[in-house]
Image (cartoon, rainbow, N blue to C red; front, side):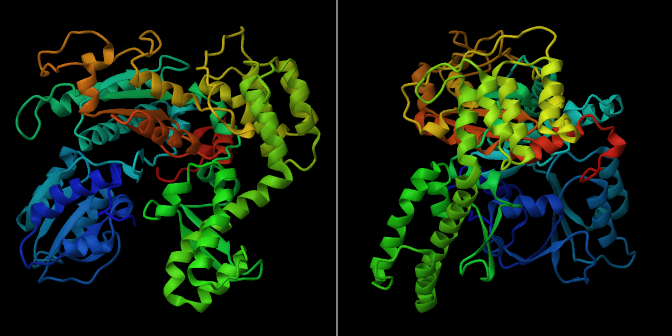
Amino acid sequence: MAPAAEERGLKSVVWQKIKTTVLDDCKKEGEWKIMLLDEFTTKLLASCCKMTDLLAEGITVVENIYKNREPVRQMKALYFITPTSKSVDCFLRDFSSKSEGKYKAAYVYFTDFCPDSLFNKIKSSCSKSIRRCKEINISFFPIESQVFTLDIPDAFYYCYSPDVGSANDKDAIMEAIAEQIVTVCATLDENPGVRYKSKPLDNARKLAELVEKKLENYYKIDEKSQIKGKTHSQLLIIDRGFDPVSTVLHELTFQAMAYDLLPIENDTYKYKTDGPNGKEKEAILEEDDDLWVQIRHRHIAVVLEEIPKLMKEISSTKKAAEGKSSLSALTQLMKKMPHFRKQITKQVVHLNLAEDCMNKFKPNIEKLCKTEQDLALGTDAEGQKVKDSMRVLLPVLLNKNHDNYDKIRAILLYIFSINGTTQENLEKLVQNVKIENESDMIRNWSYLGVPIVPQSQQGKPLRKDRSAEETFQLSRWTPLIKDIMEDAIDNRLESKEWPYCSQCPAVWNGSGAVSARQKPRMNYLEDRKNGSKLIVFVIGGITYSEMRCAYEVSQAHKSCEVFIGSTHILTPRKLLDDIKMLSKPKDKISFKDE
């Protein structure tokens, strides 16, 4: 769990809101409570606080609402749960006994709007035991200081599958996504101007309209019984097909590279410090590790340069490693000095992580990266235009050391580079590479609005010229979302391509007119100084490289804070698996929660 005390952007904001609206609301001096959580709220609290933070707020025990528990009738219970039938039924079971409930009294806080049917069920069953019943409107996870997720990877299938049987599910999913996005805005105390990217599909428009409508309803009457007008912030909603290249390219910045090449699950990295036969250890890659925050967005080449410096620093501090820069030297150092272990452990984790990345990179990925960059940009490292994309692709397809996933990623970059190919050419590629069983990983991109075998030739979007920027030869590609973020802040987004769903604040739409609901400001620059926010939401997943862009753009435009979010976080392999499943009927797919 990340520390609440540290200023970690969105995580800190969410923790403060939970502290104010839930914990402070039912706090009584000298009184301890038991806290009951469901699956969603357990994950939510884990993302923004520690158990010590909860102890400081008078919480003595945290329990799982789904499990059988012994009654503690002398204590009051705080229920922080989602407004679902499953969680409400578990709550009602705790107070179902006609004689006594499991606890002295209940304080109930829902993450989101509670439907009347569930509210009435609670009211009729155990209203005497309830001291509070409130909705606090936090229905998302702040996974990083500037990144949030709704944690609904199944939305990808419902939003992009051509299966007609899932049409009703898609409407329900879109409604749920809109509700959750509104809780992000509410938590940031923003009523943003809503815009959407008009292409390649219609999902962004539908979702933007739903979000705008729900924002209107939410802000009609706020806590102070006043209408809240549009704030000086902007929400952009985009369909995943807007930038297919960034989802399949091999990224060489540390975090993106590690999550692509290594089997990291739930942010947990497994490693061995004493060679292949050593004991396996685990480390969680999270923001309370300052070193991780410092190096996660740096290029692997820079990270590798810093490793010897870190090791020399440690060894010279205690004069124990005799200048040897190796993992075994550090391991020995840890054994000799227990009080020094904690400082070294983090560095050892990242040394192992970097070495594991390089062990995957050197044999095969390095050769792939040059091909990928040339295809993605249409120019080579010297800036010369690629005249024959197929000639660039062929060495990858003929190399037996590359697995099918890597070959499919290269084929996709080839198709994206020429903006779609012919049916005949696609068939030849599939047959020659012997990927008939995986060919849907290529064909199904068309369901995302990406031209694979287009009926007519389409133009490629113009890119911002970044030739003057310093980059590594194998990392020349810049995710399209960075262009979008910069253009939004500089007020350069075309209104035809980015229509408004709402009356946008004057500071964003370039006009001098100000809504009657808004206080007129002195000027555009003053608004920037007062700190506006840009929230970008992508339907169908975001990549780690796109997450990095939010930090880079915020750093460059210090007066505008950029937040990026999505239904879930993508890795290239997982995305290709999901793309493959789009053409399967719904009943053949197994989802996490139905």
